[in-house]
Image 1 (cartoon, rainbow, N blue to C red):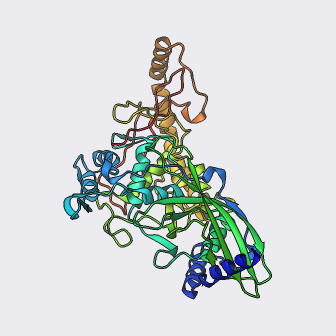
Image 2: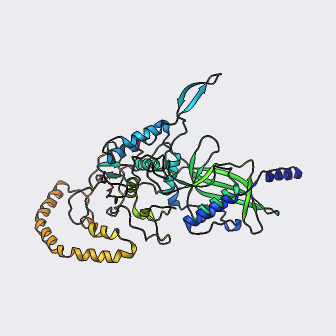
Image 3: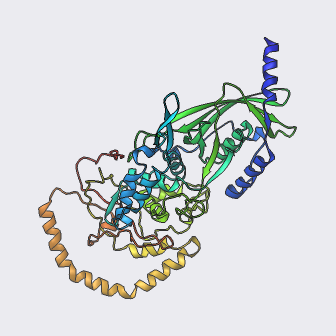
Length: 486
């Protein structure tokens, strides 16, 4: 028995490989570029388990299969809001989901009967990238009169990432080495709490998921070899896109040996037969415009900046501020990861975060009340548009400039006060049971207005305001419902 085990072990080692220097150099360079720190290769310095914070566990999104029309539903909404109702984005998506057809052969002679889109083609990599880089959309957003539900915003995100640039860490061009698998997971997730993507199953079909946790147990042998058994936790796609997505998970088991040198550095390894295998580990990068370098196959009729602005309006600012990602756009860059309070000016500086409201039940037949404008916002907006170094001067300047007009505005307000009082009394008579709010920002009567996204704004323009639509008051809270996917 002992001899058989030894022979099997030696055979496994003979099939193992030393980690190519090109792979090691790639990890070192990428980690230095995106984290500013050194990639750790010493086995004893790598954590045996790691996970992202609970709030950052990727949401379970939809893969939008090509056979089901891909993201056509979200693209039609985008066309209505930003393309003047012309079916540009949805038309491109319709073309893209039918452009590739695999010949299907049947019969004894293998005769070709028809061309068919493979059933596994879809947006699994788009959802994976979006769930890694973005906090889950929480609120419906109104843009140019069109309401996007959280589910539809997830569809927009999946679309802009499907062909976008990624940082391929290991695999694909060569077989995945367990040394690379172990070191990458421990550095990215264990040390830096950042999810990564995985192309999970070798073979023709490509299925991508976000990895966000791992746990390993190891046994060290005298010859410098280390036996490792690791469970890796990944997000799993859902059966549709939901306003509030579930957190579905799946686990892959890996069993491998690592080789270490006299300095304790991982140099190579081999998998055992009972281990899972994967094709590729990757990290999603900043989204680029479709048909441009870095996203050559992407949808050219979807403005990436507008999609990101819609997403930002859907997620409270405090949530976005604690969500660091590698290669972020300037609008989402966290300057101080410790305090997460110092940020570059957001791309939509005129948008003022408001308390989260219940989602609109269905965007196809939903009605939403226009949000009351906060007339005290100009000073806040001007302050929000400045950087950390210029915040105090900008605030002072804004106050000084607004001082001369204060008397005139006060006089106008006093003249309008009797009329406002009459309107208030009429409102109280009409709705005596209505609840009132005590927020200071809402204490001043204001005309109901809703600023919408400018459909003519270019990608370089400052993103206009996006206002999360409010819902009518009700004794019962509105339910979060799933948006149907066509």
